[in-house]
Image 1 (cartoon, rainbow, N blue to C red):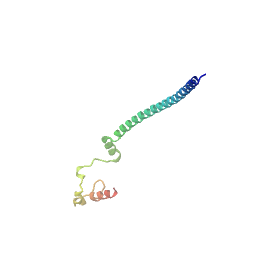
Image 2: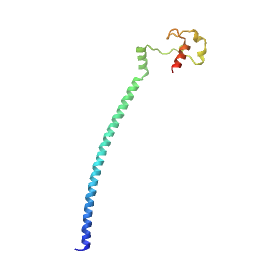
Image 3: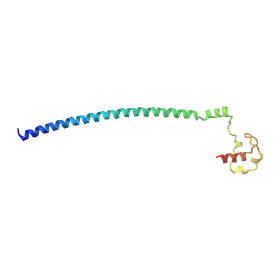
Image 4: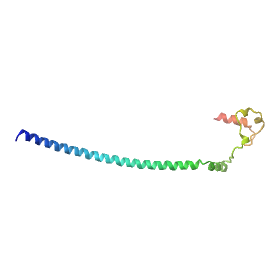
Length: 123
């Protein structure tokens, strides 16, 4: 045998081994990609579920904060009524002596000015 045929045989064996090694690597990559695809599908399903949950929570929040519903609950359970325009005051009007003369009908005998100042101190 000549050196040339010996070199060709070694090259063929080397190419065969390289082909087998590449096939193994490609198979490993294929299974890894499939695992990533399954994980991606699972995450997409979770995203869809979370979006649906968010929509449900937004709808529930919208229902629970509906002004007419809250007004009815406040009247029913707390006895609250809307503020009458005559009860509104401004900061400039707090020094007005008329506020010291009138008793606040909701609180009892405390004047509006004193109650307003006490409320401001709590904040």
